[in-house]
Image 1 (tube, rainbow, N blue to C red):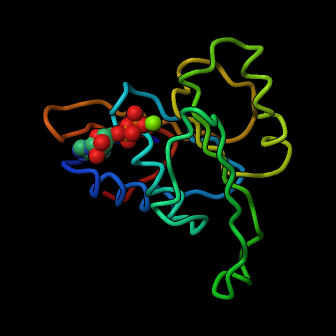
Image 2 (image 1 turned 90 degrees about the vertical axis):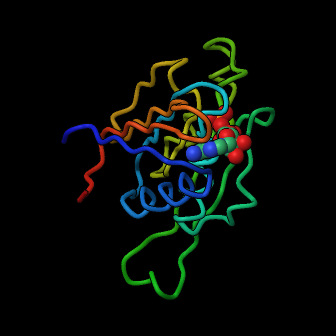
Length: 157
Ligand SMILES: Nc1ncnc2c1ncn2[C@@H]1O[C@H](COP(=O)(O)OP(=O)(O)O)[C@@H](O)[C@H]1O
Ligand SMILES: [Mg+2]
């Protein structure tokens, strides 16, 4: 699967892209987000988690201080036949200084049951997990433009 590149021109467009990505995700999966401060990692995550139906957009906020937010995707009548409930983890490693701090986050628990685990600043650590991974690198591309490079997902166009 070749890497896929997109440019968005507003946070709304980035959120829409997140929703499109959400439709392609199923647990277990690691979604590894990388890129500078303000590149749009949290904004994209709003789209992914709301797109999964695990929370409303406005309830997805940066876990900069709390480090980990957990959402529960419950079964809706429409999806009952095909899906199981699962958890969605939103993790921010910006303030995680070392491996000891990383261990204290309890990510092993997150990885013990099939979940969707979205990690901001994932480039700060390497993760030992045999789960499928989607890697998304975001970067500033002038003004409100952001370039997004995605590996591990198939796109039609
Ligand atoms: N195309 C865009 N995509 C995402 N965010 C954008 C875009 N244009 C402007 N922004 C703004 O940039 C900031 C991105 O912040 P955030 O998503 O918190 O970044 P990060 O989590 O990578 O630090 C927000 O203030 C958002 O409104
Ligand atoms: Mg962020």
